[in-house]
Image (cartoon, rainbow, N blue to C red):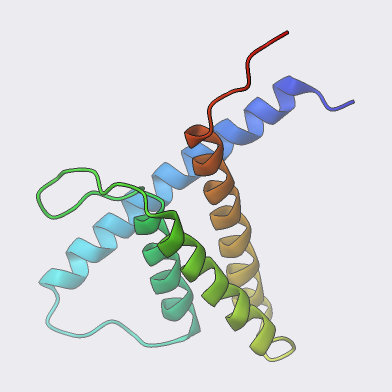
Length: 127
């Protein structure tokens, strides 16, 4: 039987990691907006762009006015599906870092998606 405290630790770790990633992405976005040079176009940029769109769909971002963007799970699932297609179509053609980035991104976004679904689903009544 799984230790419930272990699950809570994993969830807390994921939330901390997601918050840190959100902050890094916000800083990178702000820096990019002030930079005259366009960002580098490579595989990592594509994965990060799709991941950012997924986070917006999960309601994990704020709009330009500082207000939370409400979740849109159809959009989030669409971008997760796009990452899955990218994973399938690039199988065997990625270097280790690219594969790790894609696998990690997919895993974290899937877990975030499940967490949002769970948070929106009412708990069944007890016995």
